[in-house]
Length: 149
Image (cartoon, rainbow, N blue to C red):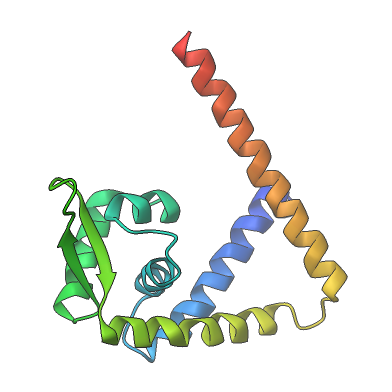
């Protein structure tokens, strides 16, 4: 099992997450909070639902985390003008400043983990991981279509 690709990918993800967790702890945020800040800053996510889907986390724990971030003045919730049921998440000035510091932290951790990799190694790994994700998405789509029939 310790040589299984799934096990090794999981271990690598955990090790990277723990290293990032240690780095961002100096800023008094968690890795999950840092991820939210980055996703909001780059426009990839705008709502709690977007974040939950992107981070693969349940909405209950995400809502509690967002409330803590709001109390710290990192984000604010803004009700949509066009659909009052939708609440957008926006970074405050403090949240934006913190989000702007994250790429350097992530880069530092990744550089440590990929220290003896060539650019070609990293490109190959990136391509393989994308193929895994694409295959998983295609498989999930096929299962959904089968369930619908």
